[in-house]
Length: 446
Figure: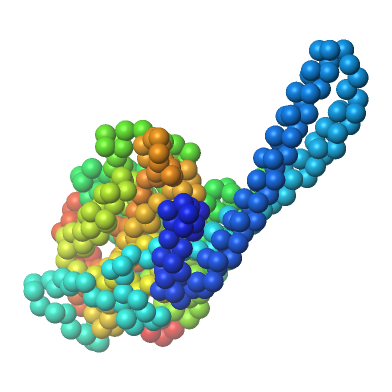
């Protein structure tokens, strides 16, 4: 959520900055003026409530003086009762006015960073840099098998039984599929651990009120599964970013230069409806409802978050370089940013059988957008400060393991099986090659 003071010029804010950010997102800039009007209504009610409290306090003092003088104060008490009733109603009005204002503020996205390409279409995502294995740009190799075919021949997954049991996009990992997925998980955690990240395994579900502080409203319908029972509805997490962002909820880092940054290597199973992905990537493990992911989540001082943004996408790049994958890093256009992100880079890896780059990593700087909702403060408010200071929150995929495996299956296949990338060999029991165990692909998989 944005700081309400940013909407108020008289408090040092810049409402035009927000309007321009909304335009860049392809969102309604008029909401800024709606919020300004709601703020005025709220402060008007607050002023009336303050004036009423002064009047009540004045009458209360007069009642005290009457009592001290042993005089009749019944008329004053009657006046006070009328004012108390009015105060109760005004108090309710003030809460309603504040809630309406904050709900509207919650619909406004983070301020888009000036370096973000402005466009209404992702066709205009900007290539920031590329990495080609061996320095050679990869080519389309249509003769290669698709990732789901390679995994099937390895005896690594069963999509048919998965769909029978769990429905569309359901799957069982079997045999070497389990080994490969666990190898990716363990290598990813070791990789980040060696870079000063604290490993953290999160809950798989969250209370609705906490989820609402870290996930935007559209995610509730399009992405999140609701879990009922036990008296309180909860939501399955779509990424470990969600519970980790709330890990320090309502906390203050009083000595940020000593306490920050805090870097977490999150590990969890993730659950997504993929409601907006009908017909996309229906084969294999690339886009599924349940998957494992290793996530980077970092809390920093505000002044150091952009440096950390570069470090985090750099860590993801190093990870996929170590696995021998060609990729490109792209800056996502303003209209495709989620509400929390001020800027986002995606790492898109090369899939040779399809001859295309596909997203494996998203890295976002959310600045203080999440931490304000979650009340994660940074330093103490000093005399003369207009506003509280909040930590900056950043998140980046290291690897969604099933999706990353799809890329490795395409790039490391041979006519006889799968070569194992060198970093994964220790986690595969020393195996550097896994042979196919099936002879052919069913017609319905091609």
